[in-house]
Length: 229
Image 1 (tube, rainbow, N blue to C red):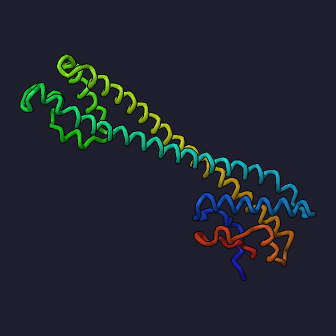
Image 2 (image 1 turned 135 degrees about the vertical axis):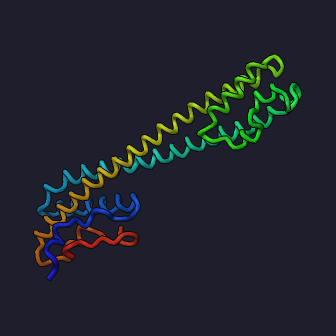
Image 3 (image 1 turned 180 degrees about the vertical axis):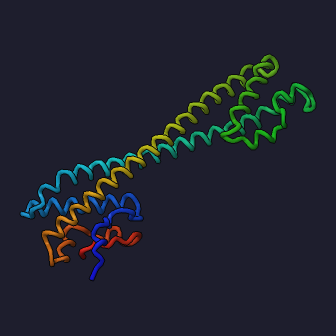
């Protein structure tokens, strides 16, 4: 005899497959359910809430994919500005050395910890390093010309904007992932209710459940077993 408590546990929670496969599985069930109802199956009341939940699930999947792509783009932009900063500092040093010897106080205003510090620039220290360079370029603008100050100031502005956008995009990605999880819980519960309702209608004929659920879509990476099959 099968364990009775087995039937009180939804088989649709905790399926470890990608979002695309999960969405495909639930979409397939919705289509099969609607088709069965159109040919006379007594499950018409199940269709509207399920299809509404399916719409929300698919939308949150799309939103997550879009946000992940945009987040990747923002990250690339931020990383490129860091690389540009390193390159610009490398170009600046010879100009500084023309005006100030390496052991001079003035040189150390540009490179207080040597040029190596700028080779190790990260998102955590780039703000301070940019401020140091900009302050020195501003102070010695007469000797270096206005271009270094203008270039590093523009770079600082662009980097700050790109970094803020990256952080915002990360927040949106977390939010859309949370929406996906919420919508997945909702549709999983509805699919479970549908399963129990359909199984009750087809007592003694578990094979008919295959008309409504295609386990092969999600079986490869995460096995689901419907209780009455």
